[in-house]
Amino acid sequence: MEMEVGYLAPYIGPLAGVTTSFLWSLTALCFTAAGRRIGPARVNALRIMLAVVWLGLTHRALTGMWIPMATGRQVLLLGLSGFFGLTLGDLALFTAFVRIGPRVAMLVMTTAPIFAALLGWMAFGETLAGVAWLGMALTLAGVAWVVLERPAALDGTARAAWARGLLLATIAALCQAGGLWLSKAGIGHGWLPREQHMAAQTATLLRMFFAAVTVAPTFGWYVFRARLAASGTGKIVPSPARRRGYFLTFCGSIVGPYLGIWFSLVAADRAPLGVAQTTCSLSPVFILPFVVLIQKEHVSLRAVCGAVLAVAGVALLFWRPG
Image (cartoon, rainbow, N blue to C red; front, side, top):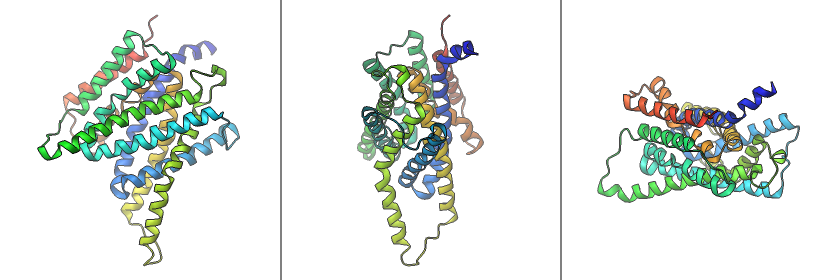
């Protein structure tokens, strides 16, 4: 049994990253539908606050403690990770969705693994073999091919908004890679012995808690507006569409900010940063079957080939010579 665990150890990180991509595909569907009913800003605030509840309950069940044990340095690193990776990064990404659309924004986000690999090399001395770089390149090429299938045409009036949207999407990619780097450092990589590293679930809880602190004012503002709007009638009567939006946000908070980010930190903890970020960036590919089955969209041969190319790249990340 011990030999089996040792054999599987090199694959835990990439497997966690691929699982993260699958979970984020589900949460993208939930939050897109919810955002159309209750607004993306409200969804963003609620998803983080709900995730803190799920993570806190899980931490209590696993460790018997409500408050995680952490050093001041770990709290600082994970707090910064929550701010840059979840609050600032998601705000930039959601705004980029509006300016340039989700298709192009997702394409720019596929540069996050490159930023992550560079940060991992500079901060932790992580070096990747040539086959791993080839796998990253194939994965990025496959995702880009899928996302770029229908390039949007620009007119003269949209150029300024387009440029700002590209800048915001690039900032989001940097924040995602930087957030993962800060999370890995917060776990203890680079300055603590392995036996003193923080558990990925505990690190996720701390990261999400500080993200919740930054979005709490947004949540409070929406509660205030709802009460102000209902002051004339004395009660709030949500429509069926709004109730469905809140239900979808509830479901999305479980598969995304709770399980998805937890698995992403397992990937960062158990794999080089570039590999972890690459395997966490497959959502545009995983989402293809869902848009066919749920949204009844036609998927072209090009999209299928792009998916195969991305999967081949991930296979190279799993390959261990000898």
